[in-house]
Image 1 (cartoon, rainbow, N blue to C red):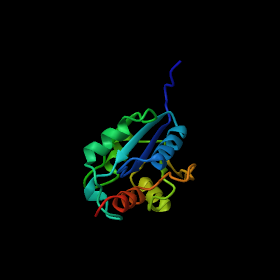
Image 2: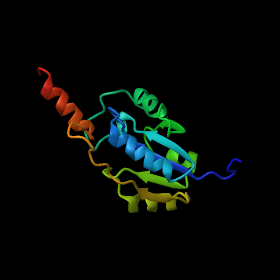
Image 3: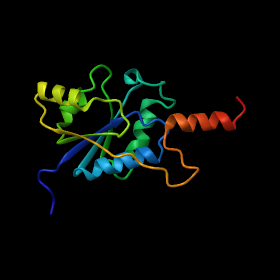
Length: 148
């Protein structure tokens, strides 16, 4: 039996150098509904940290390959709410460490007539001593272990 009215979830992020923290976030987001759409940020929208290493298309393709993801798309160059309006989700799942202000997002969703809940996923603790759950820390480790 198929669900005629699936609960749609959006997750979003940069997803540069995919790591277990990203996978945890997307698994939690997927558990919030029936369909998971992931909006992968374009380089032009990443202004809160250093620019991504990998291209937007490559990051989207890697995220799209994950079993929990129904579809990964690239974000809009100028207005991050354009794909949200198109998908019309029931839930927007924010990562535990994402810089977004949930209240501001809810206000903008209401202003645009989008009726959905904004929820925040939990963080994932390292399960092994050598596990790295941050793109920045992965890059730092690479630089540390290679001749600069």
